[in-house]
Length: 290
Image (cartoon, rainbow, N blue to C red; front, side, top):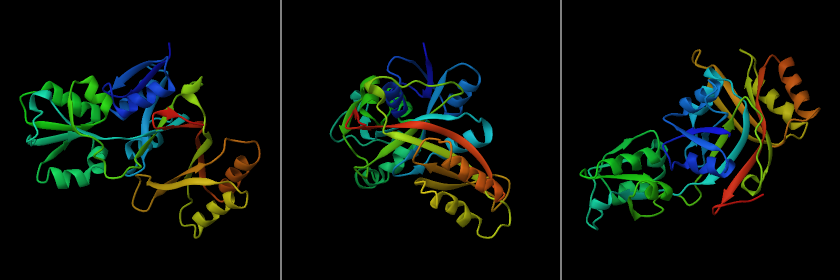
């Protein structure tokens, strides 16, 4: 049985994504994103599924940095799911006039619901935890405390909480992208894994003191008509001004175009690493679509 490490506890958005991609696998909840990746490296899980980007809050930097600086596991797949945040409390506290003394959630969820927090719970402090499901679990375990959580509907069901207000996120289009990382081949079978297309992700380190280097990097892809869907800089953590770039190309690794672009970049003095070439998937309204 395939073992998939994911950011737990049960009923996180990562759990939802893992269930979509691996409906027959054994899902193993982990406390943190590095724990998920370390589990694969240590042989405790076959694959890890971790969040890497949110439509509203941008990249999940701990995922990107850990895969670059700590554990070099290739990306094997990607899935995008819609994010719907709800305001929930313990059923013992579920009165219309209830006002919590503290709200718990993941930092991204807090950021995604700022308008609701400012308007409906103005002045109420919040505390961040490792996941939205961890927030729901904490509220469930402390029924006597005047606290609330922001989490998904599955978390409310899993931990027996009452949803006081649904869809409290600031914007309707709120999606999170998750990636599968593994040192093994990954098989996505059946309707639960209908591909939207393929993608190749590169890490590019520019040469030092090279005027116009970024322009030359982009030109290497442009004249080959390679469609870049993302380019993002991250610090190398070796000093101010030292950055690497994450570049997504909207196609799988071929035998000519992408290898040619990589060779051109290396000739310019860039260091290039292939982080993965993989299928992508998307869930819309709870259904995977091609």
